[in-house]
Length: 65
Image (cartoon, rainbow, N blue to C red; front, side, top):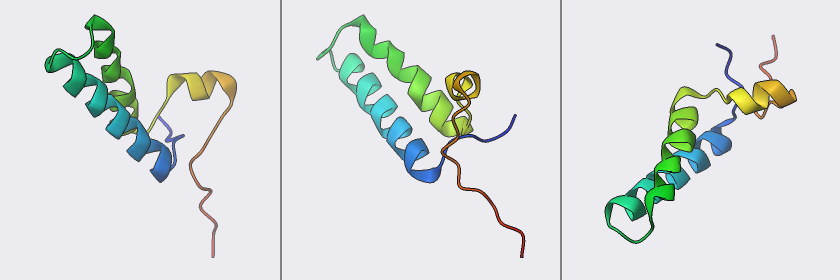
């Protein structure tokens, strides 16, 4: 698996995922909040399958010195 998410992208995914799960567990939003598992997992792994399908990559390119 190649990483295709940059640092900011990963941080935002984890924050949004945790927020959705927190709101679901506290009863503020319904069962749809469990969808927060998806951005949380993709942010933790650094790889988004949808990005692969669409050919997107927000990970910065490493340059050789």
